[in-house]
Structures are given as structure tokens and as C-alpha cells.
Image 1 (cartoon, rainbow, N blue to C red):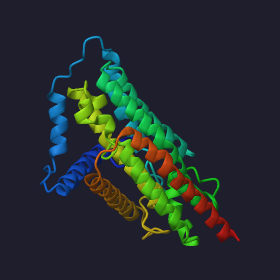
Image 2 (image 1 turned 135 degrees about the vertical axis):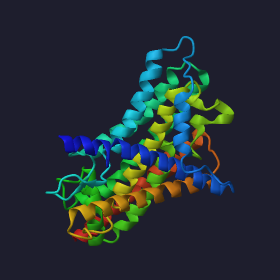
Image 3 (image 1 turned 180 degrees about the vertical axis):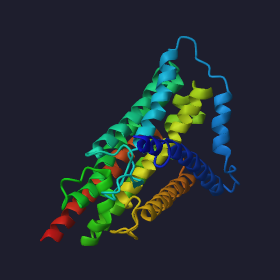
Length: 340
């Protein structure tokens, strides 16, 4: 029991996730600044921002429910933390020597999809309860964007599930088994790499849309909506939302690493037979892959300008969704070729 409490607080627990969220914030802002020929913030600036926000006054607009303005930011960061705790990072069971998330369980892929949808729904409600027309317009845009990209994301998730689950149907809906078996599946059928690459590209696009980063930041458009659904939040409430967004980046980025990049593994087998050494290596490999995903996302948003919400929805349904379906069909076709 005490070991579980320590793990929940340290690696891969809450403190580790919060610290990594701040590092991700710094990396994202640094890459974005470099892309614009700026120096960027110092390493501790994300921490300073959170501390500064908590010291500011949090004002509730007249006629707005204080209860919902308080509960929703707390629920937002709690949802992001719940998703982050599902990501396989280290070995928690020496007997299995399987890298799992602290809150991992059987069929947790479905729960992760629910967390992603809840993440988007909470953004909608946070804007709606403020009764501010700018915030409500931004939250409506956010919900429309999230619902549009959830369907392509679901199809892209089928690719690694099919690769691992074709030979191991009992484990195909578990994040830990997917990350552990991905390299082995690609090794058995190298053509799977085509479906993985397509699904990886889709997942990065979806990540940018879920996090409302350029070019998918129309729900937060400063020139049109004065920060959108965030406009009425300030002080510690805004600090919780800001930290929840960065934890969400860790969660969604970690999900991409787990499903499409082999998670904390570097090959089909562990490098050593020592659990402790492999645990350190797994953590290191996971962090390197996660930072690379964040760097790619940050670099892309320096290259592309904002698109309108109708363009975002059209992209999701007319380009990204058909591409995701093609990735699934290719993976099924390659599995039949391999089984022939």
C-alpha cells in the first residue's frame, strides 16, 4: 500500500507528471520562439507563471455560478491527470516486467477515449457557464472541433490495436500490451510501418486540435474572441486550467508515444535482464520520444497560420478521416498478406 502511494506521488505519479508538464510547456514555448527568431523563456518560466497566477485575484462575474466556476477547473486538471496516469512509463510489477501506467487496467484504451472526450466536454462547459458571448462562442467552436477530430482519432487508434491484437486478441485493448508488442508486430510484418506512419501523422494533427494549438486555435482566437472560453477565468482558476492544458499535452503526447512509437521500449526485447536498469532505460526512452513529439508539434505550429473553424471541421471530415480509414484498411490488408 505504501509503495503504491509513493509511486502515485513520484514516478510515474502526480509530481512527475506535473514537473513534466512544466518542462513540456518550456520546450513548446522555446521551439515556438526560435521559429520566430526570438530567444524564448528561461527554463523556470512556466513554474513562475503558475505561481504568479495563483497569487492573482480570481474574480467571478456577476450572475455566474461560483460553484461551477470553481468545480470545472478542478475537474479539468483532474481529468488530465487521470489520463496521464494511464500512460505506460515504468515497470510496476517485477513478476510481469511489463511497463504499465499507474492507473492501467484491462481494456483501458476505451477509457482513454472517454477521458479525451471528457477533456473536450469540460472545455465546452467552462465557456458555457460564464454566460459571456465570447466564451460561449469559443467553447462551441472547441466542442465542434473536438467532436470532428475524435472520429479520425478512433480509426487511427485501430492501427496499433490491429497490429498487436491480430496475434494476441486478449491483450489488444490494453495500452501496456500495445506498446510492448508493437515492435514485435512490425518485425513480423514490416509493411505495417506504412499504416503506423499514416496513423502517427493523423495523431499529431489531432493532438494539435485537441490542445487548440496553431493552426487549430480558433476557440481561443485573441483577435476575434479575446481568448475565447478562457476570457472570464483568472487567478488560481486560470492557473489550474493552464496547468491542466500542459498535463493534457503530456497525456496526449504520451498516448501518441505509446500507440505509435513503441512507448518506453526501444525494440522487441529489453536491453538487459535487470529490472531496475531496464526501468531507468524505459523512462529515458519514453521521455526522449515524448519531447520529440512536442518538438515536432511546436515546429509545425510556427509554420501554419490559424484556420477558421469551418476549415478545421472540413479538414477533419474530408481529409483526415479518409486518411485514417485508409491506414486501417492497409493494416488489415497487410495482416492478410502476412497470414497467407
